[in-house]
Image (tube, rainbow, N blue to C red; front, side, top):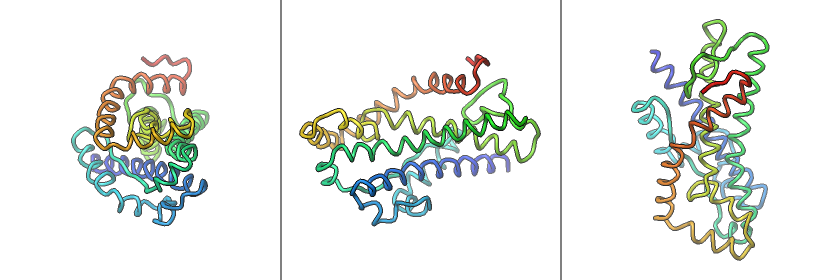
Length: 232
């Protein structure tokens, strides 16, 4: 039962975080003139349209990754108009940036909840840290479950924020690059990164690089959250 409860906690955190990410893409695109995702029902926090579009990335892979490693990975996506992106590469870039920005907001909300919980003697920093254990409850029971959920949300959204900002396709960071280019170069760049083989190669590189860089990033953010505790 403990494993089942942990898995359900992980899945709720995962699906909420992914849906926030993708709904932010869809909402930003709609506000900037591309109604493709809106017309297909993706400007919503209802997970069902997102799951229906990417059931492998939102159900199958997360469950198998949790059973294999104790944490969840996966993906989702929303449709967009490529012609709109070529006409407005700067707007397309802001759409790309909005997904990671949503994850950063979740990280900051979790950090605020942790600090508030500490101020009211509900939470305290643990002696040892891991991905799903960055805060402990003073009293066991419901607050222990809340502490686990907040820990997972903080760490998972930190991953989604930094990983998606890596500037390699198909990650969102590659879509932000047009903000640094003139329009003609931006359009050529968008054509270039849509190569399927290049996207697969980019994802492989990003995953290998992230293996090395995330632990120091996670630790640095924990030490910002708990100044003076000196976690290492």
